[in-house]
Length: 196
Image (cartoon, rainbow, N blue to C red; front, side):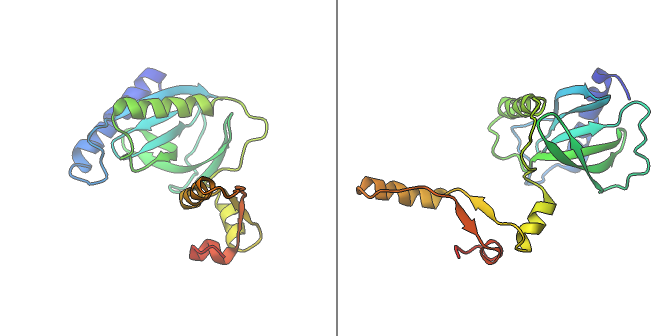
């Protein structure tokens, strides 16, 4: 593994070239953003940090010195326990960078007003990521959990959405008592997008 400074510089160089040569005139680009690496550091011998581009924000993980990822297949998913949670990464190989694993944070990037906004989000993510949690929450992208929900083996609690909150506010203004409760969603409703 290269030293931290040269590695982050290499990542930025490669993704600026990708933007220049492959991403021009793609509607997904946010023109207010530029390629930048944020918060890269060594964790358990591996290099980890956030990559910002005009089209995505990814957490990137690189192998430790002497660690061989050569047996991993491109596109394979692997879970890694980090201080804040367990995250699912996908195995990638990027020209002039090599093998790495990536976890999506944001894509597309249209919600970011400017580079400072994106950098603040990336820094906040890295700061939270590195705070140790004894009992992490379930990965929000847990496909095994999603499978259990779809098979009806597990239910999911969903807080009131924007429409329900607007209705509750209307009732409050008219003097009606409103109690916000989680809603149990059935498999049929989950698949069909219905309330029951």
